[in-house]
Image (tube, protein in one colour):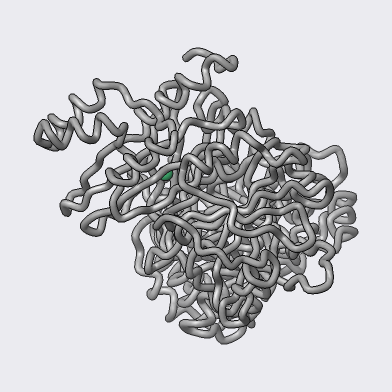
Length: 626
Ligand code: MG
Ligand code: MG
């Protein structure tokens, strides 16, 4: 399988783009002509620079408005074509993309257009070049790959073939299975992009909201199954126009793109192996059975304030690491590790970010295969020196820089608590992990979400807007099919939002809150209050509004208000109770939840009030006013 990407996907100068594309592992690229025009090199020098990075130049794009023109318009279009053929010779690229004409004077008629493409093909062949014709979704006469194929078929020239683009096919709602009847050797090139389903003008949608396969809502896998069935054996190339990606780090975007192609083609292979594309075979997506632990970097003093907070939350130290300054705290099934080591990863995490989550342990049956899949998708394995007697638990650098350990219960690695911590004491309480909430920038949220969903078997909920008093936060949720693991990712666009403030303050994007589940939150809230837990105070206005919205009786409302518990109800009648802690000076906080009646959300309706309450507590530290 040959992977490629259009230079238009990335930010930077041509050389920065090329460097990122090569480093991310692509085999080739498509040159978006304006990137070449803007460069100071001659086309010949640019071609040499690209090949020196080990990349092939698979396509020059786009050539607009060739077919269906008359008279002077037609003469000039063909002159322009010859000029571009000169350029291709200099560059060292033999395929050009012709997109269906959008010119106001372009005439329809399949045979007229076919004749133009036959002539163009003949001129290309004379120079040893080829042309690929693509149906733009907003083309004047041709905006459907079936019509584009008919034009190419009637042109009947060996140097004129078809270019398919998943956005143009799926974005218009065309059935990708109609591709299956096209001969694979007549398809010269395949471009891939996904997009979130947003009803808007097609051109605007395409130019600004395309995303990597797997980051949007289009069925790119069904498109690729159909392409694979034709016997197509050429490059698979990403063509993603996205404002955020064009403002992001080119290497990050290129890596996301490469990972998305590998993951996509593994999915395709599992359902319907393509005839000639030979995708890399990866182990299946890993199941996550739950969160085994969350580890904090505390610094050498062991974070006494965090310990006080944990005690008030019912956690107790139940084990000490045999050789390290690492303590296991537990409440029910929820394990927290406090790492006060004077060196190593946790130490550097503390030096950089203060008291923060530096490691998350996931229970993953078949963890070894999961690590292999993660590595094949570009994740970096993490190793740290081990002492004798310490278990070798596989780990990867998690998305966002933290560490993620995968604990395989089948390998007996869950013995770690007895083996390394000498835990004998049974923990108090009945808590378990409900979800982790990570915070990052909006563009990284897409990237992280796609990375988690590529490695693990997770359901993704559509993105949600959450309002912060000082701006919008986008939020997405990923959950194991049986909900043994849940993760939310919040993407902040402005530093004035709470999420943005957390990012700016911690110079780091990571876990911002940890939510624990209980079967009886009101009782837990009473116990916690007795132990000195200080809940996040929720204003009386919230309870007046909530009682009115849900028709709660005064006694229930009073009970929730007394305990500072937030309430939500879904359309099916499932209910959700939430209780929050105060934030730590680093902006971390804890949440306790109770889910009843199959409630599957995260209390998004309550988020604005919770965020405002947290901000009231953070403002004295210099929080900018909205
Ligand atoms: Mg295209
Ligand atoms: Mg939450």
